[in-house]
Image 1 (cartoon, rainbow, N blue to C red):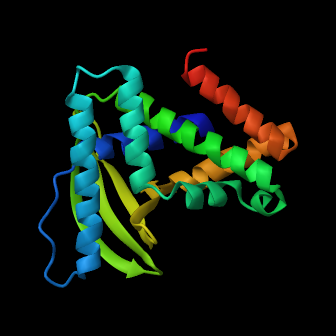
Image 2: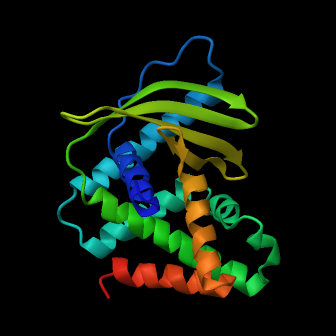
Length: 210
């Protein structure tokens, strides 16, 4: 599978996860914080379902709603810094600001496109645990009609504003690490952080249909 194919598969499975969450009862031995992490994913899915079910809103309004969900539930800065890797330290304040802006817009746009392709998969939570190394894990599975189920794990950390998603692992592939590898390849090709930013802006224009 190509890098683009892997990213697409991860993002699609994660988008499905945002849609349908059938939460299992918490185990008696779980810490309350693990239950909170599970409840966070449940709430996120409920809100995403409501947005998707509303056929009266425009594409722009739907995208704005998903953008709000993303900023409220994902730690975009933490993910963006990790994905850029060692190049973050070399970036100027202006480059960091421009990169994080286009990174968040690209991720939101990509999720919105994936969500529009929802085809009836079901999502079930299997377990919630933590903290382990400061992170809570919500183990789940995407059930695909006529195809093998896809195991998926949410990694959630506490931030100043509350719980935030920092990674999604599907079939032992980290979304954040996969994006980091993809961006590293773009950096090698373009030769600079400015080149990466331009490449991400180009992707945005393609997703916007322009």
